[in-house]
Image: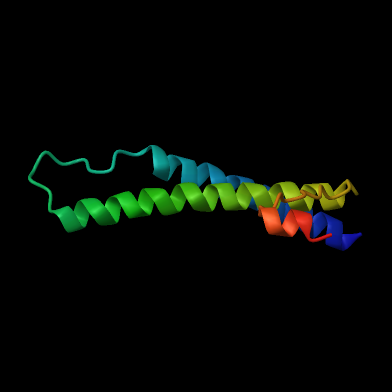
Length: 91
Protein backbone atom coordinates (compact mmCIF):
# COMPACT_ATOMS: atom_id res chain seq x y z
CA UNK A 1 0.00 0.00 0.00
CA UNK A 2 1.37 3.34 -1.00
CA UNK A 3 -0.60 5.17 1.69
CA UNK A 4 1.06 3.22 4.50
CA UNK A 5 4.52 3.93 3.09
CA UNK A 6 3.67 7.62 2.77
CA UNK A 7 2.44 7.72 6.37
CA UNK A 8 5.65 6.03 7.53
CA UNK A 9 7.68 8.67 5.67
CA UNK A 10 5.63 11.44 7.27
CA UNK A 11 6.18 9.89 10.71
CA UNK A 12 9.94 9.79 10.10
CA UNK A 13 9.89 13.42 8.99
CA UNK A 14 7.93 14.31 12.13
CA UNK A 15 10.56 12.64 14.29
CA UNK A 16 13.28 14.66 12.58
CA UNK A 17 11.23 17.81 13.19
CA UNK A 18 10.92 16.94 16.88
CA UNK A 19 14.71 16.50 17.08
CA UNK A 20 15.17 19.96 15.56
CA UNK A 21 12.67 21.48 18.00
CA UNK A 22 14.57 19.87 20.88
CA UNK A 23 17.75 21.54 19.64
CA UNK A 24 15.96 24.90 19.63
CA UNK A 25 14.63 24.30 23.14
CA UNK A 26 18.10 23.41 24.48
CA UNK A 27 19.72 26.61 23.24
CA UNK A 28 20.18 29.38 25.80
CA UNK A 29 17.44 31.98 25.71
CA UNK A 30 19.95 34.78 25.20
CA UNK A 31 23.60 34.47 24.32
CA UNK A 32 24.84 38.00 24.75
CA UNK A 33 26.28 39.61 27.82
CA UNK A 34 24.79 42.97 26.90
CA UNK A 35 21.80 44.47 28.60
CA UNK A 36 18.75 42.77 27.14
CA UNK A 37 15.40 44.45 26.67
CA UNK A 38 12.34 42.90 28.25
CA UNK A 39 10.61 42.53 24.88
CA UNK A 40 13.52 40.62 23.39
CA UNK A 41 13.70 38.31 26.39
CA UNK A 42 9.93 37.77 26.30
CA UNK A 43 10.00 36.92 22.58
CA UNK A 44 12.89 34.49 23.06
CA UNK A 45 11.10 32.75 25.92
CA UNK A 46 7.90 32.54 23.87
CA UNK A 47 9.85 30.95 21.03
CA UNK A 48 11.23 28.30 23.39
CA UNK A 49 7.79 27.60 24.79
CA UNK A 50 6.33 27.25 21.31
CA UNK A 51 9.11 24.86 20.28
CA UNK A 52 8.49 22.65 23.32
CA UNK A 53 4.71 22.57 22.92
CA UNK A 54 4.99 21.92 19.19
CA UNK A 55 7.36 19.01 19.85
CA UNK A 56 4.87 17.45 22.28
CA UNK A 57 2.00 17.97 19.86
CA UNK A 58 3.95 16.34 17.02
CA UNK A 59 4.93 13.40 19.25
CA UNK A 60 1.31 12.87 20.25
CA UNK A 61 0.20 12.85 16.63
CA UNK A 62 3.05 10.50 15.65
CA UNK A 63 1.93 8.07 18.35
CA UNK A 64 -1.68 8.23 17.15
CA UNK A 65 -0.66 7.59 13.54
CA UNK A 66 1.63 4.69 14.52
CA UNK A 67 -1.21 3.17 16.51
CA UNK A 68 -3.52 3.43 13.50
CA UNK A 69 -0.89 1.87 11.22
CA UNK A 70 -0.42 -1.00 13.68
CA UNK A 71 -4.20 -1.30 14.06
CA UNK A 72 -3.95 -0.76 17.78
CA UNK A 73 -7.29 0.09 19.41
CA UNK A 74 -7.70 3.70 20.39
CA UNK A 75 -7.71 4.30 24.12
CA UNK A 76 -10.90 5.83 25.40
CA UNK A 77 -10.48 7.96 28.47
CA UNK A 78 -13.53 8.40 30.61
CA UNK A 79 -13.57 11.86 32.06
CA UNK A 80 -14.89 12.23 35.54
CA UNK A 81 -17.42 14.98 35.82
CA UNK A 82 -18.30 16.70 39.03
CA UNK A 83 -21.82 16.13 40.18
CA UNK A 84 -23.31 18.08 42.98
CA UNK A 85 -25.57 16.73 45.66
CA UNK A 86 -28.75 17.49 43.74
CA UNK A 87 -27.55 15.77 40.56
CA UNK A 88 -26.63 12.59 42.46
CA UNK A 89 -30.02 12.43 44.23
CA UNK A 90 -32.17 13.27 41.18
CA UNK A 91 -32.45 9.66 39.96
